[in-house]
Image 1 (cartoon, rainbow, N blue to C red):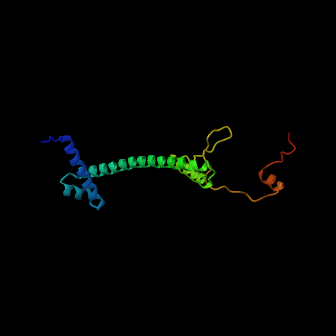
Image 2: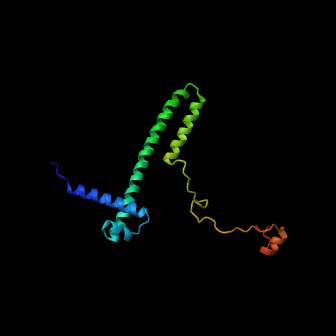
Image 3: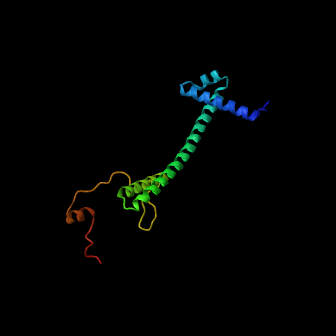
Length: 156
């Protein structure tokens, strides 16, 4: 006769309860309705749904990591095999290598947009320009002097 681990049994029951709570929430039931159907409090129903979603998010992140690693291994294989052909002068193999390298760069995030900071010539960051820039109509030198001030061309 096998001895059951009470902690494992409780975790399995909790996981099943969370799964049911999430299914009911997905069907559009309120937390009160979920609580009534599962025989738990409204607060517990909410917590079970939140924990179920968190578990799904964590599983998705782990799956993404595994898929990323597999993709990188496949790309390495493609590059190795294509390299054999490219060394013989096969231009299509060279093109496959370049595409695989580009794909690897995207997986690693090397092609991600770069942040550009607005700076002064000495490197101090400044706020980016905002709003509307008004460009005045062209005017003669005389009109400009009349509107903005004196003629400093003769000054040292």
